[in-house]
Amino acid sequence: MINLIRNELMKIFRRPGTYVMIAILLVIISVTGVFMKYNLVEDEPNVTEDWKPVLQQENEALKKQLESSPIKIEQDYYKKQIAINEYRIDHDIPFREKYNVWSFVKDNSELILLAGLFTIVISAGIVASEFNWGTIKLLLIRPINRSKILLSKYLTVLLFALLMLSILFGFSALLGVILFGLPEQAVPYLNYFNGKVTEQHIVVYLFIYYGLGSIDMLMLTTMAFMISSVFRNSSLAIGLSLFLMFTGSQFTALLSMKFDWAKYLLFANTNLMQYIEGTPLLEGMTMSFSIIILIIYFVIFQFLAFYVFKKRDVAA
Image (cartoon, rainbow, N blue to C red; front, side, top):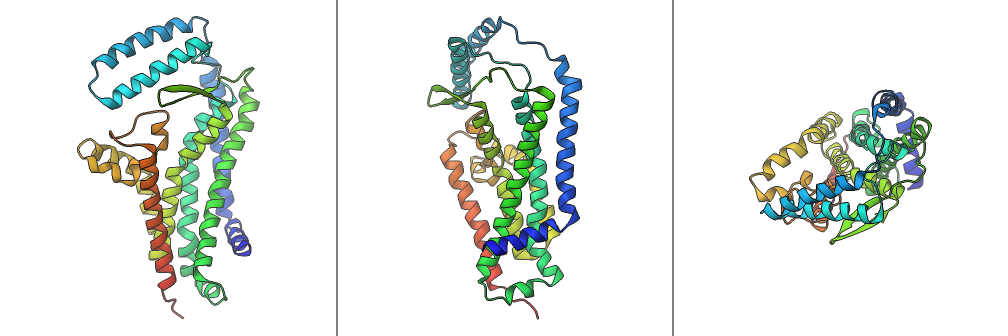
């Protein structure tokens, strides 16, 4: 298996396009950093010492909204914000701090979308290209199980996705230190769960944030891999996956406004951060529910990919 994965990685990194994708990611991170340094951050006001009265006033407004809101999702959101604000006041944790490396790393999490786009391109072509070039025959004549061949390709895609995320996180952190510096004392992230507020180290939080933010990328990459295996068409896999990447969440949000069954759609559940920093798309949705739905979709995608690949005849 290791040799198969090594061979797949060699195929990927023999293509000039792979290095172009990595270069594009690095350039965009650099441009973003320079723009933030010289256009936005310099004008950022300093954190004042009178932030506690601001949070107290905000809590008074939130309590009034809580009393008047009949919607449970809104009530949960107000309770969360009130609890976090009270924790900040009691433990002297300001809600703002000077822009620093960790702020930059979090802002760059938006580029997970770009890393996902590049990973989808690799995933869509890793099987279909073998059929297009005729090299699939050279793979299948080996005394190796077809499932093992396909699994090695999928694991290679996951390794490439991990590489892109590592480059995004690592280079953002390095550039952030150079441009914005490390904070004297990093403000912890405040978790809210079951009515209780707990502190979490900002770096640990960022790892979790990037991990959960990559769920969308993982599911679309798996879907592209399935389409590539079933239809042998990389263009279809790329086109459909990118279309859903940019429109799936919007269509799901529109459907959720009228239909409760929208909670069973893939894109209603890929954003697990909605249970940590926001509110669920529909009442009754929980993180456990979304994880189960994601597992079901994942199993369906993998079953179709492996079943068709094992059964399909390859023309001589």
